[in-house]
Length: 259
Image (cartoon, rainbow, N blue to C red; front, side):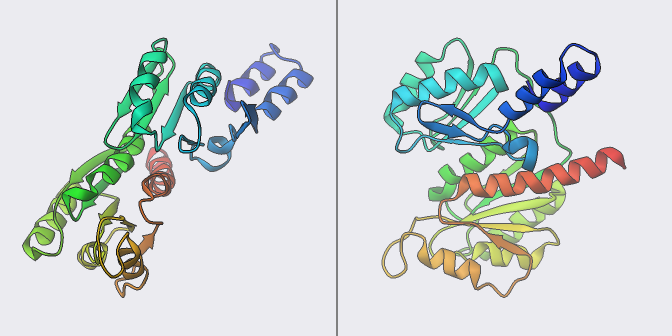
């Protein structure tokens, strides 16, 4: 039960003050199978708690999911080990499950759950095809939370004409924000930023080799950019980029709904 539902029941006389207080406190933290789940994060910050699968065994993930989904309607699980994917899907048949295998992301919803729509458009752009799995992670989360997403792949600076074409596509889509994903030297966010009048979120990936490999060069390049208007998240930080974007989108959507 979310905060609005609790308050409605309190106002309507269906809950006592003490019971309402208890339910509101329960929105803060859930202790599940040695995991402290921040159930109140979406209420406080507008971004959800995401369950990180890395380091957790399959039984723990299943237990967490089965406890949380009936209470909150939806759970997002990131960085799911590939060997867990089929077992998660088959063992959660009493829920609606969306599995994004290349992104290693799973969304589990209660039957009949319907999410909201946001009045916000996001372009997700990759420099190379090797960056697509991280882009899929960003897209899956943004789509799940109601953003309109336009994906543009393989437009790295090795062919500058592709970048110009991508910038035109973003402009035609009328994107409010762009998540630009690149490995190697990580130059794409700087170039895209220099061509557009929207916020850019730079997302470096670990694809690359040699000096500055594993995303270090891409991260440093994005941080050192002289093109203003770029925020940078950590290497391979698809969830971080998506949730930062979601904060922007929720504020924009709220303003447009009242405008």
